[in-house]
Length: 313
Image (cartoon, rainbow, N blue to C red; front, side, top):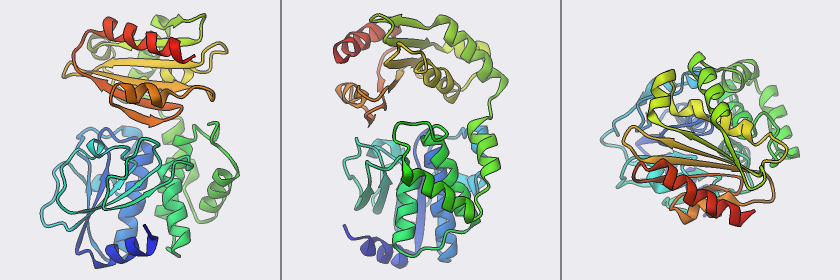
């Protein structure tokens, strides 16, 4: 798909809806924020949609997050999805043209138009390349949004995918006026008291398997309620478990309010956890993937997943 066709389709649109995925992270919200700004610069009628009602407090500094609506607007003739690794992540059924910007390996090009770059560290990097290639001006709001997604998905430039492209992008965004201080303060350093307490409890209960190569963290609703925590509060412990020298895979199993189970996988370079996620109908990246299981038998599900993880090591 030629990018010029996408530019022309955007120019023809009367009402554009920008979509951040279900339970949005910094990359999805930042990408959507950047595209929302771009639509405003084009003087387009634009709506900001996310089906999830609760937006992480640390991301509310991003431009236009206060414009998010949970109901899909009527009368739109074009949607643009950001960082949605699968169609289900949109949180809505569409009957209009869709432009799909993403970087997930699991993305099956479900859009009418697709720009999916698996080599990119974040969807904000995909957008940055798109803007640069098509001569689209990056103002301060766009630069700040793109920078926020970049530092989140690169884990503050520590991810194994961090390369010269990432640093070149960060440098240019800073020169274009990105508010890097706010991005660092909120995206990288912000943590609520409930998240601190939950992380301590998760680390205390963490189990190691396969000679310490698999770290397993389980969080049920009772624990979430005890600390007043949110789903996103579990991420810090998952990421930090991978810092242990013997651990090759960190695995989180979290009970949702609807009694389903959300599994999140992280791995070091030589292990592809996306293949495990696909086995259960999920997806993501080779070193960061996830899936959802129906039912709430956490111990049974954990043992089944641990067995597969042992085989992958």
